[in-house]
Image (tube, rainbow, N blue to C red):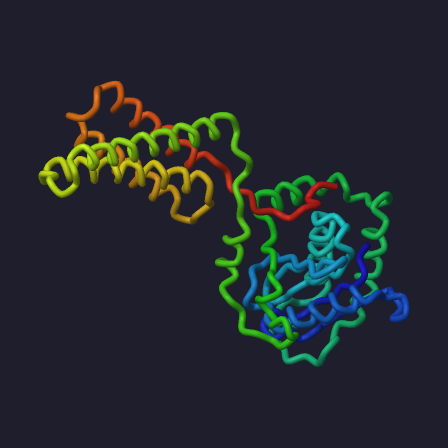
Length: 307
């Protein structure tokens, strides 16, 4: 259920309106800790994206920012994310309809200058705390789809405080977001591509080692040594394709193209040591891996998107 909601100015975190129906004695320790985190977040709202979520314990904090205002809600972590953001969207629309945006954002206001809007929030919260009677359920499909496509940015605790509780300067939230991204599970074709790449990588390593051993390293001529290096490079390129298929790096697509081009060049250089079928096999495996890298989807979403 929703426990607390507030409206602040994004620029400086000045609270314009806030409401709670819970008595202090009924609030758990987790609630108090999450509330303190919410207050810490309001001090640096301008550093975060327009839609964010943070779950420190059994409670979650969600907020949206627009036109210089931020709308925040503190609710139980089991409360559906799509309902929490629908609640925030409804508060935002009603607030902007009732008050002039420029007056609310630009004017120098005292804290809780719009405390009367608490009644509006209380009415909306009552409906959202009783989902069975929520008439807007059928209207949530568009928002649910939007959240699936563009999920909220998940805030990490280190982005607004040190472990000791002191405020810290915000690190790049985009870097933190990318570190939490992960691929969807590989299908049969993807696993086949990984297996064939590992096979090609090992075959090239074996050929390279064989050439070095047959030539007794010390007596290797320049051309034979270059062929051995080419085999070792193929070993590395096929291994790197496995890495690109497994890790969601931001530059994986251009890197995949460069790796495939290098594999093709190596095959042309090694044409005297390989049959046409062997060259075709290696190039085909490289192309298949590149296709997997391009088509494998990145998943970065919060749980509880669905109602």
